[in-house]
Length: 117
Image (cartoon, rainbow, N blue to C red; front, side, top):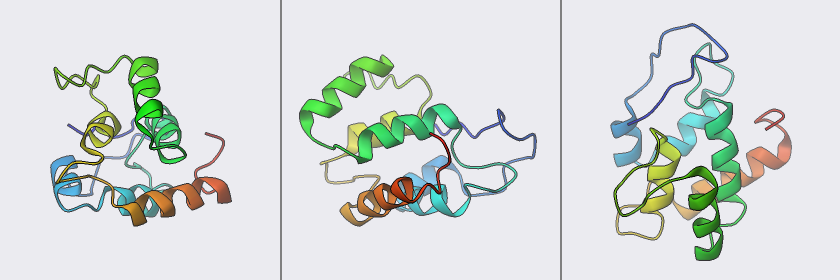
């Protein structure tokens, strides 16, 4: 499910699997903690997708970013993006990101720690 970045770095992935991170609700923490690792959790495109989501988690924005990125929520087709899956699960009984994660990610982007995304 998760697509680890090879765009910025050629190092092998050494962290938990995408499934582990989504099921344990640690994806947000791992994204921030590993942002400067040789192989970060997300590439630049997925960081941009995440930014679009965390600044506005309303149903209207979810519909807009679903269309923008060509995701098909009914078919579970997220183009290989773990962020697409996280967006679909938002508001469900098993969300990938807690409300605290979303606030922390928003603060992380606002601080500039995510880079020029």
